[in-house]
Image (tube, rainbow, N blue to C red; front, side):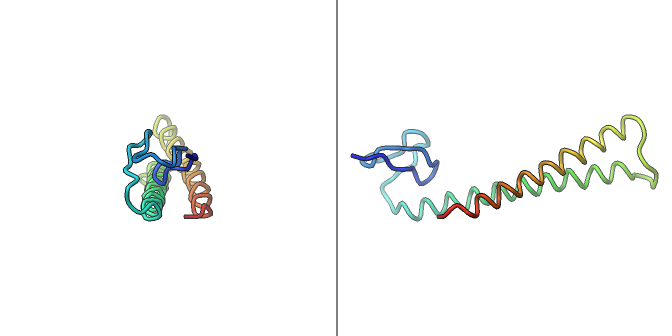
Length: 105
C-alpha cells in the first residue's frame, strides 16, 4: 500500500482506496481521464475568474469617464477601486493560468 495523488483534488490518498476521502471521487475507472477532466475544469475556472476581473477593470474605466468627464467624489472612489481590483485580479489570474498550464496532465 502506497500513497498516491487523487486525480481530482490532488491530495494524498491510499493506492488501494476505492474513493477519495477528501473529495469522494470514485477511483474505479480510468484515473488518467479523471485527471484530464479535473485539469480542464480548473482551466475553465481560472479563465472565468480572469474574465470577471477584466470586466471589473472595464467597469472601473466606464464609471470613471461616464458622461465624458473625470469622476469626482464617491464615483471616483468606486471607479478607482473597480479599476485597481480588476487590474490586480487580472494579473494574478493570468499568472495562475500560466502556472496551471505548465503543470503536466
